[in-house]
Amino acid sequence: MLKGIKVYALVGKAGTGKSFRARLIADRHGIEAIIDDGLVIHRGKIVAGRSAKHDEYYLTAIKTSLFNDLNHRNEVIAALNKAKFQKILLLGTSDRMIHRNCLTLGLPAPEEIFRIEDVATEAEIAAAREDRKVRGKHVIPLPIIEVKQAYPKLIARAIKVWLALHIHPGKNEAAYEKTVVRPAYHTIGEITISENALVQMILHCLREQEPDLSAERIRVRKGKEGYEVKINISLPYGKEAADTCHRLRGYIMDKIQNYAGIQISKLALNIDSIQPKA
Image (cartoon, rainbow, N blue to C red; front, side, top):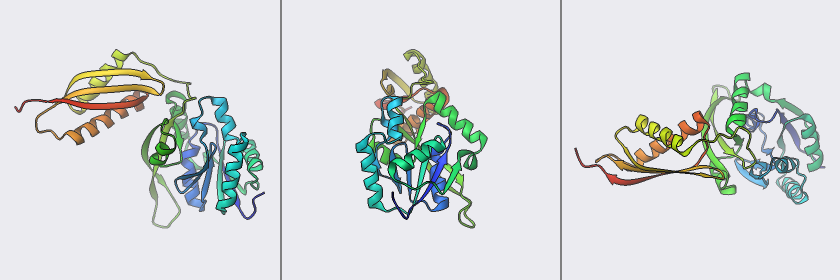
């Protein structure tokens, strides 16, 4: 049993936004480390463990989050002993899961258990559950660079969200980066679409965002982790290429993924030609 450590917990049903809100709780209470879905996280870095969101099957992911594998469990216990954290926050879907993981990892029982309803509104919880159920979106409490380095196959994108802090006088809110991924095991609510329909959606986005551009060719292929899209465009003379392509790519990804629920794993924009000067 690890001694001299205070354990806190955040409990909520799957998909209610625990992973994102964990950082807010950690900031409020000076908690150094977060244990979430098989990972030990400290200051935006993976200290030990492996993410259940990387598992191919849902049942395997559950076992990972419960540290059933002996090697995984021993790695995490060794890291906790070495780091000597003073405060740790455990995330779980029930009190039973929290107490089981404390026993498994040799941690004392939680001093305080927070509920997701204590730190998120009903509307925020409903929105998080909708993202999980319909779009297969999961959040990892890590910067996107760390996620892509550790798990390059996980589709990840970062969203900046402003949250109320109520920690320091005069400082009412702060920006938190939410790293969104779509695990391999998530199949519930997966949306498929014909290639022709997706091409029409892309053309619509292009006309809305950059009406003076011309799409020479659009190629769509459905991969294991989502749709792969390649767009060959004709750029007007004098138009800045890098900024235009970056802006257009972000616009298409946002509209199709967030509004249509279609997962795009890769979107490449290639400039085929420059339109003659008018």
